[in-house]
Amino acid sequence: MTMKEYAPAKINLFLDVIRKREDGYHDLGTVFQTVDAGDTVEATLREDGEIHLTYNEPQNYPLESDLVFKAAKALKEYANCALGADIHLTKVMPLGAGLGGGSADAAATLRLLNNLWNLNLPFETLESIGARLGADVPFLVRGGTAFAEGIGERLTFVEPLELPEGAALLIATPLDSVPTKDAYAGVPKSGPDRWEQYKTAWNTSKAAQSSGASTSAPSESAAPLFLQSDSCFNAFEISVFPTHPLVAEMKQKFIELGADVALMSGSGASVFGIFKTKELAEKADAALKPISRYQTVTKFWHR
Image (cartoon, rainbow, N blue to C red; front, side, top):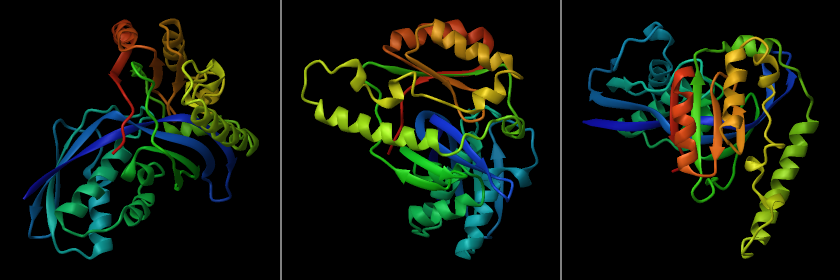
């Protein structure tokens, strides 16, 4: 028996670093959004209990550190499952890109093996297992749109967002990568105020959208918060841009090419932009090719 699972990546529509904790981790406030771009995980059942992992192309890290391998081992141990799997990862997403590619692969592996092994574990259990693998994994088990707090494990799922009619999302990763520890090293700790204000504004924006849904010409101020450039924020831009000028340049290019919103995702290096039309996004995509190692014109994703 063989099964396949899509592993959609994520962007952060808002991200603030609230404080550094005594355990060395950081409390965050962020809005996660899955996007229709990602890797694919395929698995064939093994009766002997062994876990084997192969790739579409060689990877630059040992098997034991691969999050797909770790996810399979963690689920097998949790469920005390005697079965195994031959797993094949078709890798598309870039490394060091702030898109949660490895975490998405781990989340997809948990979903896939949960079905392949007929474990019937609920999302909540898979999220709990995923939390031990990485901060983004619990959200990516389910995907959609969610507020996340703590190190990213305290999730509040909200009504999935859609892009406005005709709009398109462009994601581009510059010819650079940003080690997560470097991004955290210089990031300011903002305290809770900006995050709490953002959540309040989000609720106000959603209420305005609902009350104005029947009007023929909603005002600009009623635009969803994720489309208001002065509300979009990523604290890691403060620490990353001075030391990674290619990332800062990428964001500036997005703005010059007509993006309504442009923001770095996660701790970098990818930048995403929302364009009014797919045609505008595709023109920007073509213009950015010479300075990108990965790019795609896509949309938001949810189940």
